[in-house]
Length: 240
Image 1 (cartoon, rainbow, N blue to C red):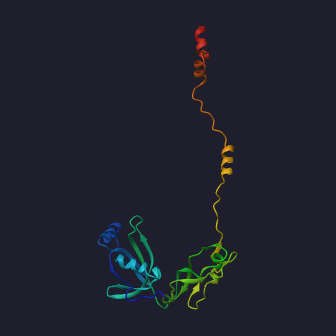
Image 2: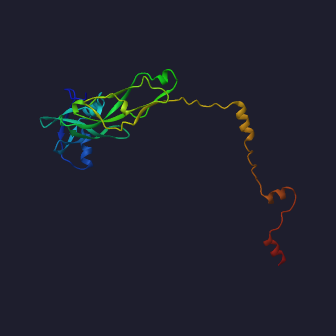
Image 3: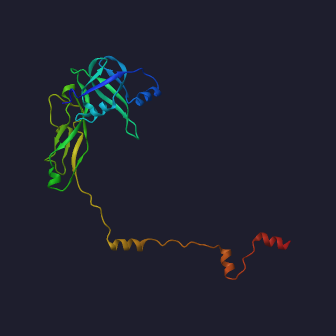
């Protein structure tokens, strides 16, 4: 379960909310701007260590990790609810934290992990396709599962495993539509390679490219030794 341990501690310092320049100054100091809210308490602006944040996000429980937020000599249970990365260098730009009451249920998204080898793959030569990768659940913070397993061993062509097929857990309530598909077996699409006869037929059927006319009618007549016909304007001038 996604509970906090001694290794899951995020140390924070309060900061005065300001402009974007203030946020840049925090980052130049090696910290990340953050805010914490929830549990009926006011929102507080913070600065946190990006290495500690990255350790939490890359842990087994990821953003569903419940950790201790150490602030002003006190510790509060909290979770990361939002984070932003710089698109080019991938550096953390901002973190949103939420205070957690361990006796109040919350809603989180939990990854779905497919287990077993599908019969449709092993015996029928199909491909296992996972349509849904996360399921929304409601539970107490201490009961958040790292993942929800779905056994696909009996999955064959024509079958669809849905949210309703997930393993039931008395401590977790699934909020996602029970009819939402999770996985099924699809066929292998073979790429058709054209035969030499087909290639030859296509070449024969292709229309010939039109010849490019490089010279106008007047130039053609002059090359043939015939004088070009006078234009109407010229004849009128000769009459005059």
